[in-house]
Image (spheres, rainbow, N blue to C red):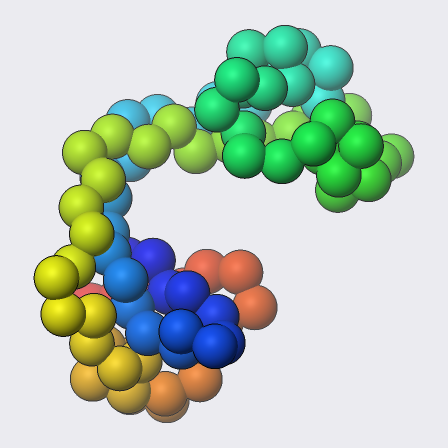
Length: 87
């Protein structure tokens, strides 16, 4: 599921994971830059000092017509820092 931060503040959709790609940051950028959605500078800042970088290849993304509020999906109602598991 995908949560959009404020000002939206709702769960806007979901997607299936095709695969997790792990490689050196340089190799990962080369294979994902077309779809990464960020600049090379931001990518390099994020993975600075790392030998291995990871990316999620998205498959079958779906946008909700009526996005639910976070508390209806996550009991705490608090957005996770990066991800969390849902039951």
